[in-house]
Amino acid sequence: MAEVQPELPVVGDPADDDVRAMEAARAMGRTARFRTSPNPWVGSVVVVDGRIVGTGATEPPGGAHAERSALDQAGTSVAGATLYTTLEPCDHEGRTGPCTEAVVAAGIRRVVVGVEDPDPNVAGGGLARLRDAGLEVVVGVLGDDVADDLAPYLHHRSTGRPRVVLKMAATLDGRTAAPDGSSRWITGDGARADVHRLRAESDAVVVGAGTVRADDPRLDVRDLPDGWVDPGSVRQPRRIVLGAIPDEARVRPAEEHHGDLGDLLDRLGGEGVLQVLVEGGADVAGRFHRAGLVDRYVVYVAPAVLGGDDGRGLLAGAGAPTMADVWRGRTASVARLGDDVRIDVVPNR
Image 1 (cartoon, helix red, strand yellow):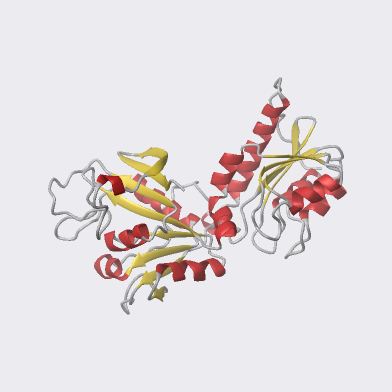
Image 2: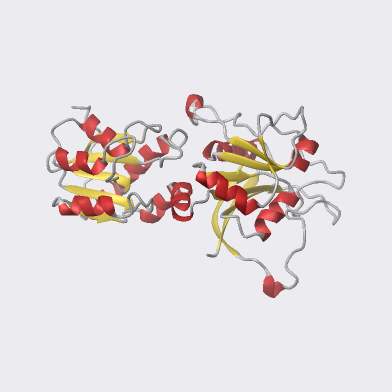
């Protein structure tokens, strides 16, 4: 049997133990964040008498799912145990066998799930299989937090399209470039490192041809903080340019796209892309925004002021004609990164 993990805190309400164990499962899921796409980065733990005896995370496509990994680490003495998993266990044959079969065969008595899986191959079938086998099944522990962890996967399986994250950086007075077009660097090192984290979390990065010509960006993942993640576990995102790519551009190898943005998202979704990071300038940002294609806005604001009305704004193109037509979202989070501030906003849908 694997080495027994520290005992969970003893509390009066068993539901509190469920929360603590699900937090441990979430932590395991985060260890797989950069290596499992297009599969979800699921975490799982097995608990016997208040002690974690097995942990697991989804392996790269073709490898074991989190539940099987946790059971394998726990060994054979798990009859009557509780298994915690961030996502509903699968009940179908894919690259691996159904996780529900392994859970039932191990003698697990109780399964606690963060969120149901909207994938049509699962969609409640795993929960039904476990209940039919006589197991107690609890769903929704830390459900909102788990849904945030798995947002790209859940969005893709629900809509068929990748989740679109629009990243922008601006001065305090809302400018993304000076009148001469220069924009490096608005933000500091902390914010720029955070952008590389966003790229590492994304399967594709989209930028306009104008930005490629003006800034010649690489759009790869580098400059991650020491110890933040194993560099070997990070895959470079696909790089997609809206328009023609200059022959000597550093963004190569990259793909060109000409045409409708919705068509691009449909194609990428069909190819298993779970999250797209849009890093284009004001023109591309405005196009995605006005088409209603953005699922999360990430804006880095620097304590810098250009001090006029001749700098470039966040979004190019026509805006709302009156205050009654203003687009409004919901602030999802605010974080300080050195002297800069990251603000995450999601649409009111």
